[in-house]
Amino acid sequence: MNTSWVLQAETKYITSDLKVIGTTTNKGIFDLGAELSLGFVSAPGFYYTGLATDWQASGNDCSDWTDDFSGAANVGTPGSTTTDAISGSGIGACDGGGLAPLNFILCVEQ
View 1 (cartoon, one colour):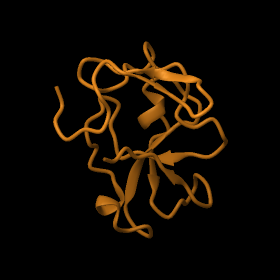
View 2 (spheres, rainbow, N blue to C red; view 1 turned 90 degrees about the horizontal axis):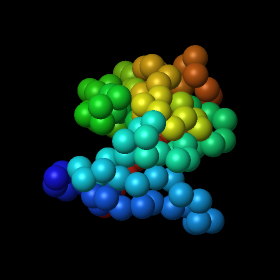
View 3 (cartoon, rainbow, N blue to C red; view 1 turned 180 degrees about the horizontal axis):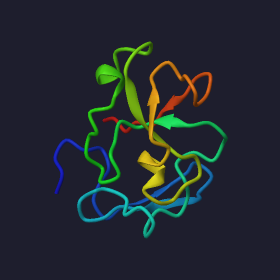
View 4 (cartoon, rainbow, N blue to C red; view 1 turned 90 degrees about the vertical axis):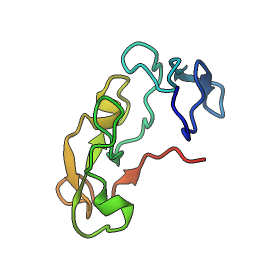
């Protein structure tokens, strides 16, 4: 079991309009491709995650999310229900260069 992690183990998560996002595993993560029913973001536009496809910190996180003009971060693919949801679009420049004028940050925080 993960500690200091906001997602609860074996819990169904839904949107405000009651669409099922997915159910977490006993480790409190989504089994991407198996349990994720709805992509994190359906609108166009990439988003930074800072995560590798195994849910571990990738080290690519815009200098611990403190610098939006240099560095890079792992980028998720909108609408994806596979590992692409957290790291499928590669690594993007923190200033949005090449991906979009501005990218969103996908985060989970307590």
